[in-house]
Structure formats: C-alpha cells, structure tokens
Image (cartoon, rainbow, N blue to C red; front, side):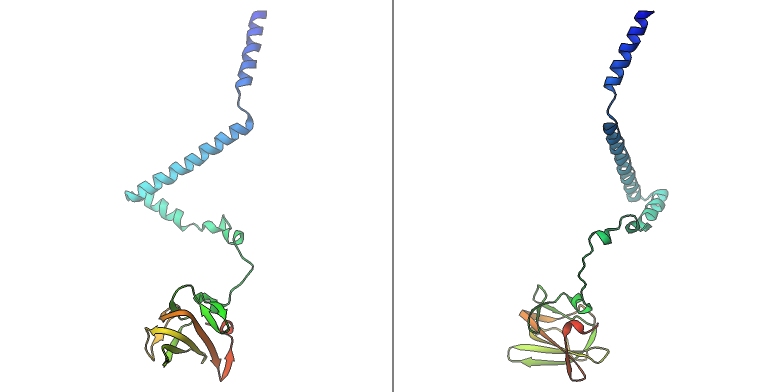
Length: 183
C-alpha cells in the first residue's frame, strides 16, 4: 500500500511540473481566439464571394456596424489645430497673398461663378463671384480651362500655374483675408 501512495505522489509531482504556466496558457487561449476570428472572417469573405444567401446577410450586417463606436480612432489621432474652411482647397501660404497647393493645378477653393478672365502679360487672372457677393481674384495662372459666366464647384480646376497663385478677396470694395472668406 505504501508503494502505491509513493507512486501516486510521484505521478502528481511529474504532472504538476508539466503543467504550463498560467500566463502561457492565457496567451495560447488568446492566440486560439484570434485564429477563430480570422477563420470566421475568411469564411464569411469566401461565402460572400460565392454569393451564399446567409453569408451575404451576415456580411452586410457586419459592414453596417459602426466600428468607430467601438474603436475611437478619431480621438487617438486628433490634432489640436483647426483649419479654416478656405484651407480645404489645400493652398499653403508661401508669401504675401501667394499660395501653392503642391501641384501646378489651380483649384477653386469655393463654389462660385466665373465673372471675369483677364490676360496680364504672359499670365491670366480669373475673378470668381461667390454667392454672398465676395469677389476672389486668382492671378498668375499660365493657362485657364474655364470660361466667363461658368458656374464651378469647390475643388474644380481653373487652370495651371508655375510657382504660386496670388489670391485676393474683396467684399464691397474692402479687401478680406483669404482665410476669413467662408465657402
């Protein structure tokens, strides 16, 4: 009988020595859970590709979930700087009334009507009239792709330029800062 107790104790010792650490066990469970999620996701994508009806319904439901409510990326990558509405056209100020947008394509920062196009030496000046009556002059264009009385949307191409465009804004004869003009 004593031999049997001794053998049982020896079995318990070797069995407890082989038991994995709790942290390692938790890691294995996490890896298995991630693998399960990946397998489910891949199976849904394959079923969607094969256009199986149940998979289509499940896939559409998953795509309709607003994941940003679970993962608040907006707050993680938020910057404290705010840009004015006029900065949407991606113009950077490079001098006094001089702007550049990183390309040679002049884009309109506003929805407006082309009220005048004037040739100045080897360049052009395009005048835009906004709905509130503000006149925006965009000068130093090499070529112009718009016509007078044409209604253009924000981000439309006006033409091309070399180094910079000069932008000046006027309302009732008073010059305004480009950044203060609202779209």
